[in-house]
Every structure is written in C-alpha cells, then in structure tokens.
Image 1 (cartoon, one colour):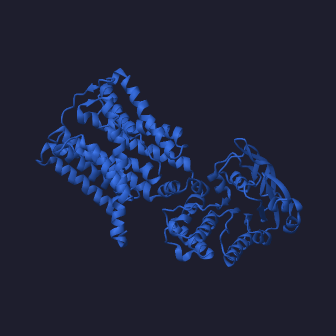
Image 2: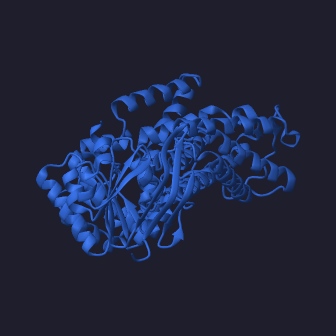
Image 3: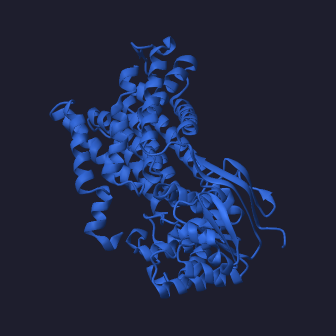
Length: 239
Length: 310
C-alpha cells in the first residue's frame, strides 16, 4: 500500500465516563473508497468528528498526508483538504443555496465571487440542485438538504471527502444518483469515507469496510467478508 | 457610490442644520438619537451578523466615556483624540472580553457580557481620579467656530461617528467577513468545516463592535459636563442597543439605523411630553410587539409588503 492519505492511530475519545472511541486505528490510501459501518451509537460520527476537527481526540494521533493534524482547528483541516457533510443537515439557512457554496469557495479555495458562483453552479447542476440555486436554504426539503450538505463539502475541493449518511431518507433512484456522483468524484482522485446505514449502498461503493461497535473496530475487510462476519452480524442483529 | 453620496449628504445636512437657527433643544435630543444609532450599529456587527447577543454595551460605552475623561483631565486632550483613544481602549476591551467569552455560546455568552458591566462599573466606582461613585464635574472647553454652541458641535461630531460606524458595518456586511459571520450565526460547526476561522472572525467582530461603542461614549462626558458611574453603566444602553437592531432589522446595515431613529425619537418625544420613566416601558412594549408580529423587524415588514423590491 502506498503511504496512507489518512492515518488514525490509537485514537480514543471519552465523554465523561462514557467511552465513545477506544484505540481506533485506521489507514486510508489515497484514492480509496472506504466504508464505515456500525450500529447506532457505535462511534462512527465521533470518529468523523475527531478526523474533521469538530471534536478533539483525547489520545492517539491523526495524520493527514503524513502530517499530524489532531491539534488543528477544524477550519485548518478543511483548508488542508478534509471536507465533510453532516448527518443532521446544518445548512446556512439564512443564505441561498448558491451562497451556501460560496462560503467554502471564499474561505477555502479563495476564489473571486464571479468565478466562485460559476463553479458553485456547476456543482449544483451535477448534484441536481441547480433549479434551487436561488432558493433560501430553509425552504429545502430534507432530501435537498442532504444534497446541499454534499455539495457544500464538494465546494471545498477536498482530497478527502467524508460523507456522513448523505443518503438517509433518499429513494432508491436518488441513492443511485448520489452514488454516481461519489463514484465520479472518486474517479477524479478524491478519497472518500462513506458512513451509511443503507448497506446495499456501502457495500456497492466501498473497496474496504470497517465495522465499529461500542467504539471499537470489530471487523475490517472487503464488503463480502464484512457481511459474512459473525461479529458484524451479532452487532447488528444481536445474538 | 450611491452610498457614499448619501453619506456625504447626511453630513452636509447635519452641518448646515447645526449652523441654522433651530432651537437648541433639537440638538440636545438629536445627539442622543445619533448616539444610539452608533451603539445599535456597533451592536449589530456582533449581535446581528454573527448572532452573539452582547448585553455589555453599557460597559463599552462607559469605558469610552471614562477614557475620554482621563485624557481630558490628564492632558487636556482635544475631543478628536479623546474619541480615537476611547475607540482604541474599548476595542481592546472587546478583544479581551472576546478572548475570554467567545468560546461560550448562546445564553452563556450573553450572561458573561452582563458581568463585564458590573466588573467595569465597580472599578470606576473605586477609582478616585475619575471621581469615584460621586462622579466628576467637567468644564467644557471654548466653543469651536463656526458653531454657536458646544452641543451643536457635538451633534455634528456624532453625525460623523454615525457615518463612520455605518460605513464600517456596511463594509463588514458586504465583504467576505459578513458571509463568514452569517455562516457562524446559522451553524458554527458547519461554518468551521467550510473553512471559516470562527474564533478569529468573532474576535474581529467583538473588537470592532466594542471600538465603535467606545467612540460613541467618548463625547458623552462633554455633552453632560459630567461623568458618574451609575448613569454611564446604565443597563438601558445595553437594552436599547439590542432592541433597536431587533426592531429595525438585523440583516442589513440600515436596520439598526431605522431602529435607532424610530425608537430613539419616540423616547425623546415621550421624555418631553409624558415622562422619562415611560421611556423604558416604550422599549419593552415595542420589543415585545416586534418579536411577536415582525420578528425580522421593519426590514422584514418591508420585505413582506414589497417582496419584489428586496
């Protein structure tokens, strides 16, 4: 394997007496499509928060492109090339859809307004929100908000894109649509971490999957081995 | 360009009015309205754009006034120097307060800013040089030509401060800073993950807002020929500076100006015609009415009535 793009080593996170992550280590290669699964409360989003900087890990190290980033503020990590979507959409609701994308264009890519608008429109077309470009973000439906989350993350021109349940609540054909976009982003060289409950989507998308349970990695492998793994079945189905 | 022509026109009108034979009381009252325009505009930079409700306006305002008094008593500094120094000191106070409190969110930040008033007031009460609790009588310098009275000159000075404050607020609003502050107001976490350096921007807003509040407070001691802690640190300044943008509208720089003009004028008229006690009631009633019926202020009402013009 080439030098990893993201290397998480022994990362733990506690909330009071609750251990959300204990000694989690993963290494993700450049260009990889990586799936992260696990039952509710298993620590998936906490791990993502530690990687993106929304939370600080208590111990362990997180390296991006060979450099330690666990001490950096979230905005610095975004500028280094890590962008994420939020599981519960957090749009800038007082702005138009287009303006939502201008924020990362202005603060991460440092584009002129006119160029930024043009590129933002391109992303909106790609994701199917072009006709809503000038609508206020608080008028969007849940499905559109999830697309906006992904679009805003794309606008930051990441090298690592973390998609936190971008497909929850989407219909079958919409899931296919989003998958297609993620595949094409990956084909452009963007590494992608996908957190998803829609198994069929994760399994189709990912080259490698890990399963978290109670803050620990219980299984790692190709989608086929994950599905067959008795521990994973136990974590999901209970036994 | 249109904005700058308008700003220049406001200044020329203020200047000509000050030279006219208008009743002295007009300037006495208008000074207060203009002062509230500066305070409301300053408050809105942090409170309106970024959504951080600051209850400490009175502290920044009073520290501006006390800075002016110290400079006047110590060096006999001219008004312009007093104002510049007041802006500097209150700006530094804003930076310091921001560093300590801006990691707090929502109601916790608001509470912390109230505390600043009590801390600063206690300090001034115990500082003999500025008169302690009894206050300090000040002798106004001679009237500067071409104005017929000191109050008229202060009126023009305050009009200039309004233009400066509004220009700063407008720049912040339409520049990249404004978009970042709005992102913070909408979702701080998402802003941070979209590359917005949230703490830096909030600190900037808090500093600029504090500096403008201090500048607004600087001419106050000369206006009253007196300074004293209880009235300088009056919570009314905090409440008004918050109520005026809410009533005018917080999303645009004109909002606080409209709010201050409306509320400030009503207050002055009520003070003269009914009683100064009713003043506070007026703010309260209007604020409740607007929060319930027009949560986006006068600007929001206009948008609703003429949606195409916005």
